[in-house]
Length: 210
Image (tube, rainbow, N blue to C red; front, side, top):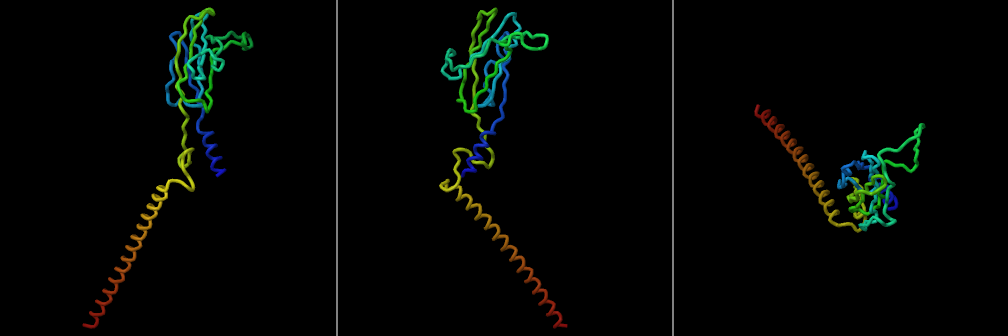
């Protein structure tokens, strides 16, 4: 039982390989604006990339992680202000270490499935010019291996008797087929012996008549 539980846990842990969805934010808005793909499941990540080339433009993302419809709680996840490009020094390092061009949020493997709203704020010269709300639909990560019992499946003593009945029916059909095949084989052998005896008898009669 312990080994079986360990197998189930290992199967669940390796059930899903993380995928990252890209949301490109341009002057007209995010693309895609809403994530509704049923493949976006627990454990996946979403990355917002600032691609609005408007001069002195920046954006900020706030994700309603507690699903309460508000964006001002400390439990919500908020990005820094994102810009189209960060200024670099001659050796390729950031002039401003806080400068960001993208924001990534990874959903936990046990995150609550549902519609997560996110807020997108636009700013020009550090003045907010627009605020829009969109959503990310998070689906439950369901993974079942053929032949491996999943949580809720019955196995061992106390399972549905119907399984045993169906298995017994299959065995009965197999035994019946074997019996029929054996009977046919015996009948064929008997028929061959009978034909041979008849042939011997006919030969004997011909010899006696001569």
